[in-house]
Image (cartoon, rainbow, N blue to C red):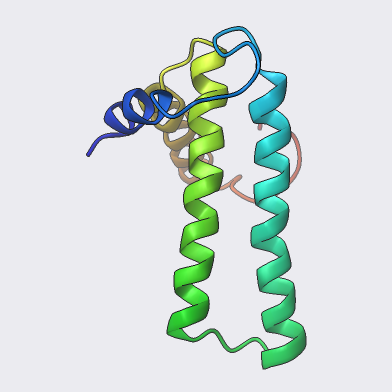
Length: 109
């Protein structure tokens, strides 16, 4: 499956106010789901000394799927191709790696 396939198929399950002209809803959903991922990791650090087991991995995977869904809806709402978003990001990061500026500050380094 490509990211485009995912984006197109996940769009079928998008049920929220003003689908197609509401980038705010998926933005808020993304923040919430990313928080759920962070919370699961926090509890693993707190309760399990940072040791992740298969059940934890499965649960985190489910939350990451929710994060991906909201990213796909945001891209759709903003008329962006998820394939292009991913490719542009990878191109940017590989450029930074090649110029030895992967670490550091600023978006345009």
